[in-house]
Image: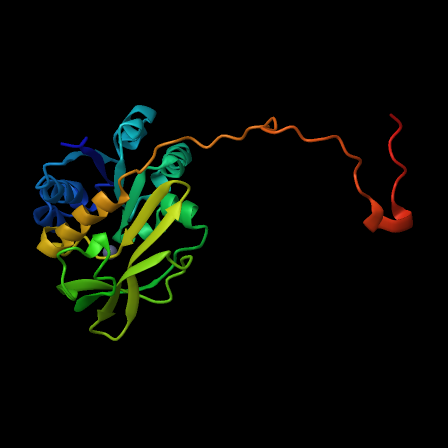
Length: 261
Ligand code: ZN
């Protein structure tokens, strides 16, 4: 068997602890529910981390042992340390996969990697969402069928201020009329990034079998192909380059005299 994919599910873990009825939907936290879904796959080695752990559970060592990181955050994005964000960004550029979930669109790490505001329109009205699978041949949609239907969802609507995805996987329709790019892929450095929008904390989204399948597919897709730091070298030529004067003829009379040898 190949090496297992080392997966870490990160969650700010505040709503579930602060609001009793949300805690009843996710008694082990949102991270616990996501991790349980992923643990159904024997080739995935799944751990979790939360905001209130030292260094948010994302130390150098923890990230060095992580192939794919999943990120759920909402009310405490501002509490995530900039040092940890820089560390995660570096690891993504080196090749770690990153899966950003739901309100993670406003996380520091996602905005850093996208370079845009990542703003969107929203509404909580318990409405129906249908996520259309527009890339049925993509590994992330394997086994999903033509669409995923969520009986209750938070509306996320366009315009979503992101760079145009390298690949758009899902487009959502909402009962109230809006549409949204709900499954988007990018590459940054060697790392693959997937944003997947369903996951509002007041609905049992992460127990939905198709949502779990998409997350497992996305983890497999985002697993690193290489993990390599980016370095900058001054290079000696591999072939001999003959000495030649700098050609200044295009500058006409403005050309400086050649240097004295
Ligand atoms: Zn939400």
